[in-house]
Length: 323
Image 1: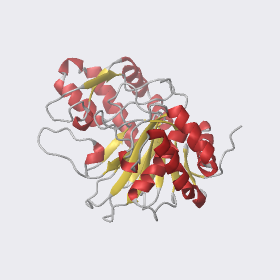
Image 2 (image 1 turned 180 degrees about the vertical axis):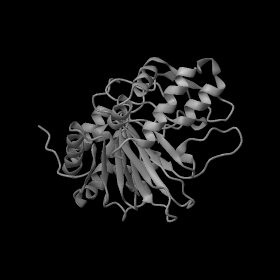
Image 3 (image 1 turned 45 degrees about the vertical axis):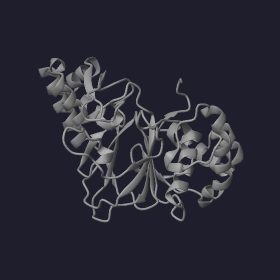
Image 4 (image 1 turned 120 degrees about the vertical axis):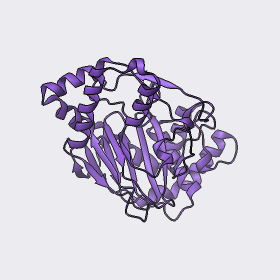
């Protein structure tokens, strides 16, 4: 049985842990494994998904006992009731960004199947910096400095990844950019307390709504390409698929999917997102880390003005994902 790493409960479903600083010392051997696997030198921020991820996972975990131990401990926590894990110090801040990306990539491979963020370059280690274009370009939250309301990642794709991780290279120095996390169970519990909320849950389970895919994640990456994913907002076992702006944009461009019952249900959902208990608010300081079960929690971020803020994000399916 996987050993559970003792942690501090920040809220129901969200834990904070400390880790052994030694895990990053295996960078040279992990780089060697990656270079042998991909057949060339690698750069952390340019890594793409492996065509043989199971083989790569086995090789990485076999070469680094420290990585294998960290993977086992994180997975053990998620096997319990946790929907998010916070690590205040990853002990990587002495490394350059590419080397940090290599280690985070290896951690994601150890836990599952990393995915390419965009369909063109398939970049796994995604820089979260304010860089949005203007005009008709439909920006995603990772390109903006404005508030990112409660949402789940990749809700605009048919098969959203089970997990994502965020690592802070440089936190915002302006006092903004605060992260918020809440387990989905508290959202559905809040809704189930009233007849109106229970009706809303039925509507959100039954209706397929159009999620507009942000421009950067379309095949072309250009503003003129409009793509959608059609799916219910609420799934089984407290699974949520939600981001207000992708739904609103989808409904505005495809009004035949709009409906008064849906609007009532969305209003109830937004009330639950604002008022449900057990919210955790935290600032990801330099060298801190957050990994979230994207099927069991929602997350948000406050606005910021410091455009030197720099995070790295990786999305990945869990190790049981059918490929």
